[in-house]
Amino acid sequence: MPDIIQLLPDSVANQIAAGEVIQRPASVVKELMENSMDAGSSRITVIVKDAGKTLINIVDDGCGMSETDARLSFERHSTSKIQSAADLFAIRTMGFRGEALASIAAIAEVEMQTRRQEDEVGTHIEIKASEVVSQKPVSCKPGTTVKVKNLFYNVPARRKFLKTDSTELKHILTEFQRVALAQPETEFSFHHNNTEILHLPPANIRQRIMHLFGKNINQQLIETDTQTGVVNISGYIGKPGLAKKSPGEQFFFVNNRFMKHPYFNKAVQQAYEKILPPGSIPSYFIYFEADPSSIDINIHPTKTEIKFENERAIWQILNASVKQALGKFNVVPSIDFDTQGLIDIPVAGRDNELKPPDIPVNHDYNPFEQDSKYGGSTGYRKKEKERYDNWEQLYKDFHQDPEKGSSTPMEPEADTEKASQGELFDDSVCLPTLMQLKNRYILAPVKSGVMMIHQRRAHERILFEKYSEAAKSGSAVAQQNLYPVTIEFNSADFALMSGMLDDLANMGFDIRDFGRNTLVVYGSPAGSGKSDPAEVLERFLQEYKNSGTNIKEGAREKLALSLAKASAITEKALSREEMQEIIDKLFACNMPNFSPDGKPVISILSLDELEKKFR
Image 1 (cartoon, rainbow, N blue to C red):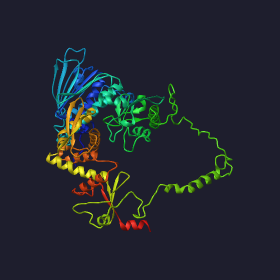
Image 2: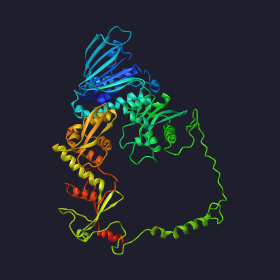
Image 3: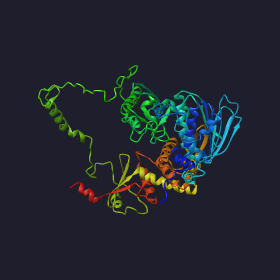
Image 4: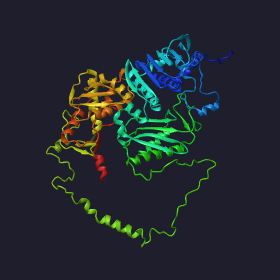
């Protein structure tokens, strides 16, 4: 039987490695920008075409490379950062694995042009699918320029799974933001399809946040700064008004490296627990400074997941730091946040002896003693008596109409009995007796009992069918706003919105690009009511990002769903005419019983169920 185990060719091994390191164009931008940072660059320019599918060009003014180093940089596991395993625990640079350039060169056409300050000429290298096409001297400026063309051209299965340009551009801008926030003293610029989208001058952290997310965010930031013997924490957290329903402005950095850490994210979320509605996500830009020997950044190929030695202690410190910042802002009750200097936080370990605190206890205390100064049973019985004696007050202003036999706000009209004896779904559903419960449900008597309608889901169904039809026909009419509404987005959201303007126009929006990440809303869909266009579009963007829609693949109904969920009424008091209008339009829909995402809209409480309640 012949041998079956064989060594993979380098080109195949590099393609496999590329599957872990290079997942999409944004991964290329991240790796190349981090290489530029490690080269000591003071200015980095990112140029992409077609959301990185056609071209990714990174230009820096860093230290550059010699001819030999330039060639070796494309070999797998070639790195200048580490020489032994011990060096892994003293890393402060971005890249160190030596996989990025080799992986990129395996699935794209790559050109590199680099020169050191002391050299007279630089080096130009061209590589295609891991094969060196040419290497020659060239006249160029000090620094390095890397061009990546036709990403995944030789792996069509990977290229097929790339999303639309707007979605891929959003991912690129997210990686760009992460590097730019980690290095605020460096100048960055970003160009897409020959248009400069962002230019970030050297700045401090607060200014860099404003340059990326708009000037309006400045008034919503709270500074946090905590120095301890375990870790130093600094940065900014958002006021409650900055919280959103979808993630996007949550950033952790450790030693100026972006990281993802769900465990620490829970520490921040818990600090906001009592001051944010459920489902809201606070914004934060938090920087950790820790001893490199106490963290492990080598647990994932992309180096975004990091392990800390004392995670439990850091969780408590982070949670307390966020609460301290919120307390200074008077969002939550504060205790004493004027402690100066370094706080010594004891960390549990083998050499630490933990002692329980001494709590004084009065063993002679009797809670049932009649003359107890704490109230005793006498005080308890007195309060119980007062509670029962005053029960009549509950009904002081309660008047019942003996003629109608009802004490509810519902006032049946003369044809109530006739309506309740009719069919539920007829050509014209006219329900003379309507009631709204908790500003969320519409109640009405029907033949079999009581019909309950979830008003938000009903409105979602109505709007979804309206927007779906408009998207197909492109016949929606825009109702011009009395005053144009200007909305400023961050760069990633602006790129996403820009790619959807044509589809939103088909649904009745008149939105125009004002430049500098700003859109102006001149008109909204007719019949959208008095909804604030800025609020609707912000909610729509959050719903859209959560759905992961790809418009070009025939999923415009998901766009309609996102817009319907964003525009639908929530807990709102409705007049009788408004309730009647919702019911009429709901029963005119193709599927009135379910919301667009399959949740029930209508429920019938039968007479039999009502009778059982009184047995």
